[in-house]
Image (cartoon, rainbow, N blue to C red; front, side, top):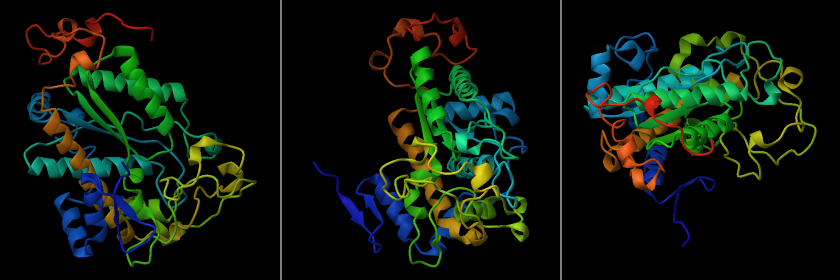
Length: 366
């Protein structure tokens, strides 16, 4: 049966007739006064909470982490990198985008008495596509290091009782993170819910240029109008627009075949499926930007940030409804490990009879 779609007053924007689609459509059509209220509910914008006590697992007293986890065993894991985003932006832009969004969701759920936990970003230096090679300010880590770091992060959080994990990513390393998710399950066969949210893609409709005052004027690419607008909204003190410059990529062939960073153009291929059709960044766009960051006013990012915060909250609520704290996907339907073998590992960590995953036997061929 064909899916039903919800039209908008813009012919190139539609939403699936589903709870997710209806949520996004409501935010897409809301007056700016309502968008401001949503941002206020999430406490955005705000200073970084990475060093603020009680906000992340790693900066919270252990007993309080346990108390929060018993109410809500979902953890948000912001994924970052160190990457040149133009002379006007900080190289930790991707990290701070994700931490800012996750922190807003934490504040919101705390007010609702089911505070979601946050983990420190496991990647402050990330993996990169080939075309980022050799540009100053970008630190490239191998795919294997990225994958293994994520695998062991997931394992450690699972062992501590966080059986539902949502990674929130902004950076061009999606295939490495997806590989890590599948490797985690193949290697350990533990009952869990693990998902990767490419936050900008999850609300890609909000990055499509339309004839509206708060709209972006260009499609999302890299260190451009879109990313600079988000940075100016969420951590404007780290941005210096007085030195901002615009730049356009140099292509060799296949123009129009590859989509942009949020897949909003419905083109045949994602941006990461090829190399060689464009000059690498070092020679094509040494400015570190692709597009018009000079147009990146903060107000243009309000609607997409409101949308992603509401969407992540919906994900959390959906998971909690189907799998309340302390429960996992059915063992018999998810893993070849037996309930008898996993029973001790599923007890409260460090309680009597509990076993760590490090006491399990290896299983399978991976």
